[in-house]
Amino acid sequence: MTDGVRVDGPAVITEDETSIIVPSSRTALSQPDGCIDLRVKG
Image (cartoon, rainbow, N blue to C red; front, side, top):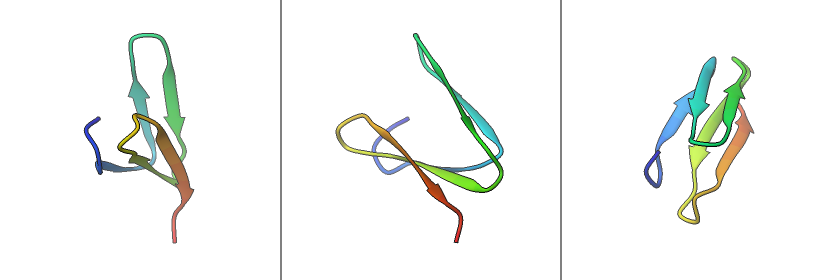
């Protein structure tokens, strides 16, 4: 994911060494430092 990309759940984000499950109640947001922030949908 590039910086600022937003993915609404349900979704699965896959990386080389891990996978992140984004439930339907959450949104994933890619941060500039490479972290992925999961937030409750508003």
